[in-house]
Length: 343
Image (cartoon, rainbow, N blue to C red; front, side):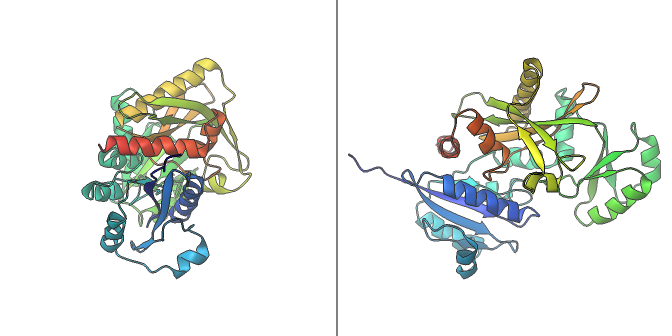
């Protein structure tokens, strides 16, 4: 038997966003599922203070190890990775600094291949207000909404809005449903905004759509080939009104049913729209688009995620398993795409 040359793969996790903890879980799951007969794995943890902990090759990123590893600057950490002859990075970062084009631009500058979408796609997809405008220009149905700024006359804006309470309040650049709330009246809206003005200068307020939530993963299996949809997943929160942070990350708080319990025509419509969102937002590798089907049968797109969660229980690995693809095989596809794209 010949000697198999392993690729040097870094897994980037952590970051300085509100989703640091979830990103660490995603990164650990990715690390554990990379085939170590094909890859030499290395965990790279970005701290909330924007420093970096770089672990020795094949060292699992458990809490005890992480406490012992010194923090470095970005420059010194990535200089070490360059000397290691890194072949590609798997991005397990979520939220600001990880999913918004910043880390992608840094890796582009260093000419290091990375998984998922590029700089422009990441930046526009992360900003819910910008993506709404792109969806509308491409005839993709979205919930009615308005953008609030701190200087606005709130009562006047609400009176002029084409929809009333209840409403959904969203910070435009946070993921994992952080800060998203349903508000029933002007007082609740004002209280929610007081918290959110510390996070962003603009806040998105949308009509609350009562109905059923679905999500659809889209994947580029080979560079240069058309993206393909995976089976649609139905999301059924057990204890909450919508798929909020607790529903996403509390074990048993949500039923996730793949394939969704819907007819083939609706499933195909969701898949086609998910692929369209992936394409118009210039996504690459893997994306996930979330949908709401109202009780009167209208289908709305909520958002597109360019780095969906990658924990063992996240949608992407679950959907892959539903079509007979292991987590490791999914990562193989993502890494091969990243390296082909960089050639």
